[in-house]
Length: 171
Image (tube, rainbow, N blue to C red; front, side, top):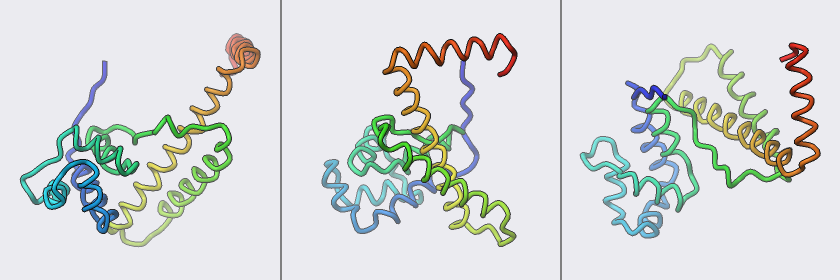
């Protein structure tokens, strides 16, 4: 049904490094919140160490920090798209989602036309922008879908229009 392939790139390792750098001053508090020794957490986030995060630890860290960096790295390692936290979808946030998606796409566009050398930090920033754009556009889609489904009259109208456009070959 699905054909997951593990990437040859070090997406998860890079995500661990990025997470550790982003939360450098907070690692002790994060470790305490998830019931782990701070040094063990540092070791598990360091790809040069033999210790590795377990699935449960990865989930606990993501839940405690609400930072999807590690999950996104894991998904990228499987050649999948970034995580989209569906519990964030809220109709009142649609304008903010659209603006943030636009900003992320603008950042990607600027990097695409740049002739500067692609350093690791620029690559990381580019991938963060891509992931943010996907995440915010997905939140727009989820929110709009929920809005349509919560209003039966609107849902029937959308279904009717979809049926008419497909019968006319407008898709």
